[in-house]
Amino acid sequence: MSELRHLFPSWGFLLQILAILHFLRRRPESYWFFIIFFGGFLGASVYIFAEMLPDLGLLRDTVEGFGRRSRIQKVESDIVDNPSAANFEELGELYKDQGQYAKGREAFTNAISARSDSIYTFYSRAQCSLAMNDLAAAIPDLEHVVTANRKFDYYRAAGLLADAYARTGQLDRAEPLFTEVTQISTTPETLYNYATFLKTANRPGEAREWAQKLLAKKRTLPRYMQRRERPWFRKGKSLLKELDAK
Image (cartoon, rainbow, N blue to C red; front, side):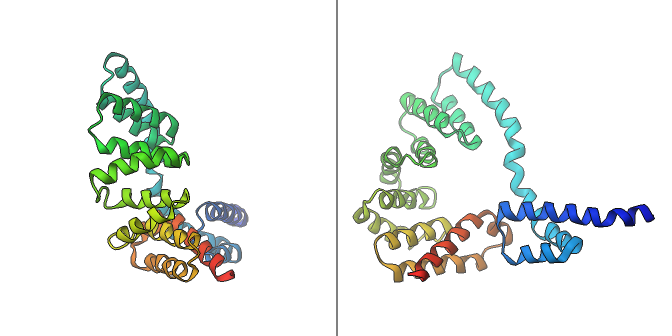
């Protein structure tokens, strides 16, 4: 028992390191750092139970990645004998989920060559292009999707198109689309992109208002959604600081 008491400070230090590493990666509320740093073993334990354990649910994609790789190999083999649109679409989705966006986009292009009547495939290819920051390639695909179905993916496709317009300097095309989308969609992604557009359009007062709406949105979301959307809230805080500094 005395040996365990002797090791207790070491375990506390290790827990603190573990908690701080998680904090630096996930960037929760800043007060957690002080709880971990000054709270020692107890502070680190509280943080682990409050922030780290709930985050385990977000690791599902990492766990699924092992099975996804074997499925990719299977679908690639199937395509040799059956280069159908459906097989290429599945391969594209697997690559996209795996973060291999160039390969995913190539697979979606092959699927579209085989069958061009699925706007979902155009949308998935656009998402790969956006992930690669290839806005010039993403815009035509998003335009195709939005023209076919204005409400596609709960207006996210239209919101992404508006953001792509804004980021390529086409502010006159971005504004009416953003105005339409923000009347329906209040996702953190849309709110942040619209606030950024307003900043780019030299409308800091409106940009500040929408950035504040983004941060207010956090209070209305359940905890698991707050975790998923945390990168957008972090970007919103940075944007608000930039606007307040001017």
